Amino acid sequence: MKSPLKTLRLTLLACASYSCYSVQAQPVSVLDKVVTTATRNESKSDTLVSEVIVINRAQIEAAGGSTLGELLSREAGVQFSSNGGLGKTTGIFIRGAEARHTMLLIDGVRFGSATTGTPTFENIPLEAIERIEILKGPGSALYGSDGVGGVVQIFTRAGTSGLIGSASLTAGSHSYTRLSAELRAGTDRLTYAIGAQKVRDGGFSATNSKVPFGNFNSDRDGFSQTSVNGSIRWSFVPDWSLTAKVLRADGKNQFDDGPVIDTRANISTAVFTTGVEGRVAANWKTNVSYSISNDRYKQTSSASTFVTIPSIFNTKQTQFGWKNDVKTPFGTALVGVERLTQSVASSTRYTVDSRTVNSAYLGLNGTSEQHSWQANVRSDKNSQFGQNTTAFVGYGFAITPQWRVSASHGTSFVAPTFNQLYFPSFGNPSLQPEKGKNTDIGLSYTDRGQSVKLIHFENNIRGYISNTTLASNIPRATIEGWTLGYDGRLGPIALRASYDLLDPKNELTGKQLARRSRNQLSVGADYDFGVVKLSGQLLSVGSRFDNAANTVTLNSYTTVDLMADYRVAKDWTLQARINNLTNKEFETALGYNQPARSVFVTLRFHPK
Image 1 (tube, rainbow, N blue to C red):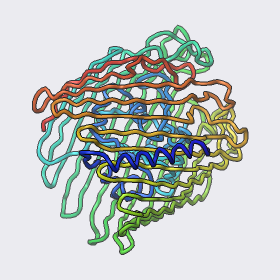
Image 2: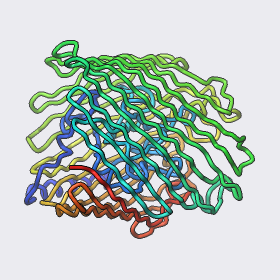
Image 3: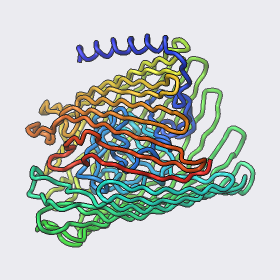
Image 4: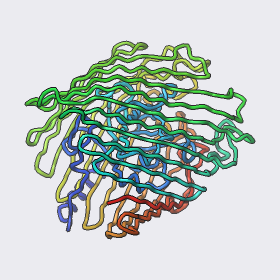
C-alpha cells in the first residue's frame, strides 16, 4: 500500500493546487445537500463524519435504459455484479464488502430477501425514485444487522404544492420500451403523488458458454415490469402530519439455467409505510411508523432437473418504529425503539422460517464552529442469536475554511441468512453472526466550488461467513482501501472523478474476495448550453476473481456512456443516450453477459 499511498498524496496535492487557480468556478450543490441516512435526521452533508453520496432526480432521469445496479456502480466505492441485463440478479458491493453486507432501505423500510440475505435491486423501477443516498461505512449502530459495507436508501416520489403532471416514453436497443406517467399535487395541508410505469425489454442471452453448471442457453432473456407508486401527506393540525407511501412492482424475468427450456420467474416488490410525525415541544419531534415489505419470487419454468416447479421464495418484513429527535445544547439527540419480524414462505422447507428483532438505539450529532461530531449505540435482541450491541463514534474538524479532517470508528453485526442456516443439505445451523470493526480517516479540501476528498478505511470482519457450498465461519476477513474523489465546476462544465484502491482479503487463505476489483476509476463531465446539455461518463474496473480460490479471473473493462438532452419546448425534452459506446464485451460474473452498445431515446414532458 505504500506506493499507491504516495501516488494518492501527490494527486491530492496536485488537485488542491489546481483548484486554487480555477476560473469562473461556481458552487457545487452537492456540498450543501441535506441528507438523512447518515444520522437518521436531517444533516448537511458537508458537516458529516461519514461519507455519503447523493444521486439526485436529474441523474436518475439521465440514466436512460440503465439498470439500478449500473447507476449505483458509477459512484465512488461501489461495484456490482449482474447475471445478465435488466431484471437479472444483481449484487452491490460497497467498499469491497459482500453483497449481503449492503443494506437496502426504501423510504426507511428494510427490503430484500431473508433467504439469500441480499437486497433485491433488480425489480425497483427507476422512474419511481426521487433520490438515492449511499452511506459508506458501517450502518449497524443506526439500522441494525447487515450494514457492514454501507446502506443504500431509496426515496420514492412525494407530493408537492400545486398541480404537476409529467410523462415520459423511452425506446431503445433490444426492443426496449418504457412508458411512465405521474401526477403530483397538493395544498398547504395535503399533498399527494401517484405514478405508474410499464417496461418491456426484449433482452439478449444472459449467459455464454463459460457459465458454470451447464446453464448456457443462447435464447434472448427478456424482462417486463408493471409498477405503481404513491404517497400522501396530511397536516391535520399545526406541526403534526400523517404520511403514507407505497411502491409495488411486478416483473416477469427470463434467464438461463440450462439449454432448450425458456426459464422464467415472476418477481414482485411491495413496500408500504405509514406514520405520524409531529412536535411534542419546540425542541422535540417524534415519529411513530408501521411498515411492511414483501420480496416475492416464483420460478414457473426451468431447464434444471434440480429445480422443483413452482419454486417459491417469499420474504415478508414487518417493522414498527418510534423515533424521537430532541434538540439539545450539544446537538440533536436521537432516541428510538424498533421491532422487526422477518418471515419466509417457500416451496423449500426450512426448519426455522421466522425471527424477530427488538431494538433500542441512542444517538447524538451536532456542529459548533469548526467542530462536528456523531455518536450512536444500538442494542438488537435477535430471537435466534440473542443480544448484540453496536456503536459508532466520529469527529470532524475544519482546520481552515478550506481544509477539513474527520475520523470515525464503528462496529457492525450480520446475522446468517436462512439459506446459510437451514437450506436442506447445504445449511449450517451452527453458524454464528459476523462482527465487524471499521475505521475511517478523511481529508477534504473545498474552495470556490472545487472539492477534493481522500478517504482511508479499514474494515475487519470476525467470523466471516464463507461463500462455499456449506457455509462456515472463518476467523477474519479484512478490507482496506482508499478513495480519492473530485467534484467541481469550471464555468458551464461540471466535472467529477473518483479512484478506488481496495485490498479485500480472506485472512485465512490470503485470497482476494470474489468479484471485487482492487481498483476502479470513474470520470464524468456535464456541459450545459442551456437548450442542450451533454454528458459523458467513463468507468474503468480492474480485473477480479470470480471464485474464492482465485483460480478464475474476470478481465478488466472500461465503458464509456454518452448522453445528450435537448429542450424541444418549454415543457418538453428529448434525450438520447448511448451506453457502452465502444461495444466492450465484459463480465461481472463468470459466464454472464453484460449489455453491448445500447441506444435509448426518451421524450419527456415535465412542466417547468
